Length: 96
Image (tube, rainbow, N blue to C red):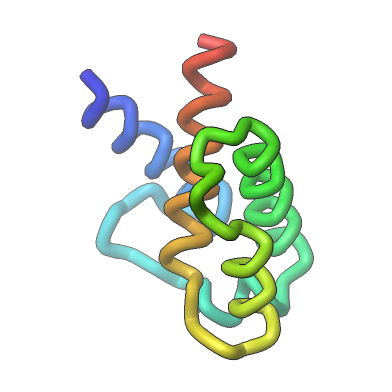
C-alpha cells in the first residue's frame, strides 16, 4: 500500500512540475530548476520547511542542504526532491 501511495504522489508531483506523469520522461533539469525557476523553488522550499517544522527528520540539516544546493556547492536536487516528496506524502496522509 505504501509503495502504491508513493508512486501516486511521485507521479502527481512529476505531473505538476513537468506536465507529464510518465516516470521515464523528464523535461526539467531539477538541479538548476530548483535554483532558477521560482515556481519549482517555491514548491520545494515550502515543503522542506514544512517537513523541518514537523521535526520528523530533525537529525538532518535541512537548511544546510538547501543552502549548499542554492550556493552551488553540491547538486542536492535528489535529496531536496526526496524530502519534498516525503512532506507531500505526510500531507496526503493527514488530509486523506
